[in-house]
Length: 189
Image (cartoon, rainbow, N blue to C red; front, side, top):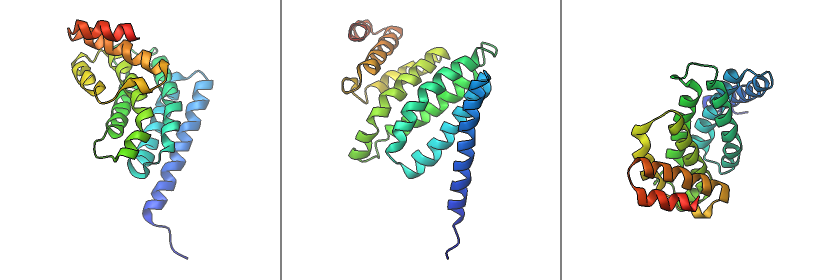
């Protein structure tokens, strides 16, 4: 019988820790401990993304991330209500995770089939990234977000994601002084 490799032992430990974080987040949310719930869920998503996305690269991870990211976003907003207005620790941590996932999904080194498979997650990540940037008043990143928005066409996505995209694209265009683009985006939203 072959001994399990050190990598597979680490992988099992990481999955066990990730599952524990996920369970802790649900329990904390049910107990109205939003800071703990957001922290545990973001920790789970971070471990999940590192393990599954950066190493295994399975397409099924997209559906899990698509389902859990809205919870992480709303829970982080609830958690940040209980801390001083300047810090927003949960939102900042989630923004870093969403940025990392967005970068991985839009990686030009991915082959065409991988990029197509991850395209459903790409717009969701961009929308969440922009929402968090506005929440955190990260005005220095707005020009980067406009550049990133040109990497994909939102017209192939669900209408709700399109509306969110065009609304935030309009806000970004308005802030950057591109009024024609802002009017165009707002009319599409």
